[in-house]
Length: 212
Image (cartoon, rainbow, N blue to C red):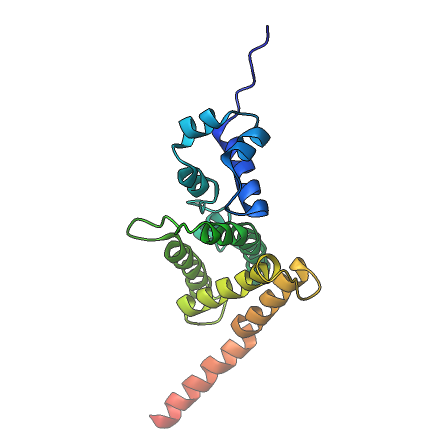
């Protein structure tokens, strides 16, 4: 006789997450258990209380996929290409997380950001590090990396907020929006052309000779 299928914690949390986001905080544990293919007893055995299950289902990942791009880069590819890659990944992260954060808020549960460095601070630090290294490698012009990283994150979060909270999706689509954001930042951060840098150094040497 075949053994009954063991439903993993991840599968239960996936079902719970979908139910909470779609139906709101009043969705019952009975409904979640039924859709997950387990009993209510299993839910409470695995997660303790409904609130704990909600926290687990809607939690922010400790290391979103895009953070590895920020931590390991930039590399030798063109800077704009790498900015676009980062932007697509960050926008996708926010598109997934904004509904979770709104669902947590509707459940009256504050994000569990215990520790010395809450996730938003850590994510901002990682992205600021990428921009600082890109500037140091002369892939980007000199800039305030912390300010640029904050603006970059904000620009990529606002469309998912419109989509999931305001129930609107302005513009021509997610990818077109992301490329618009990248174009705007690239316009401000594009490094000077090599000949412009050389001319600038030449003017500096001439100026020094004249002032000497």
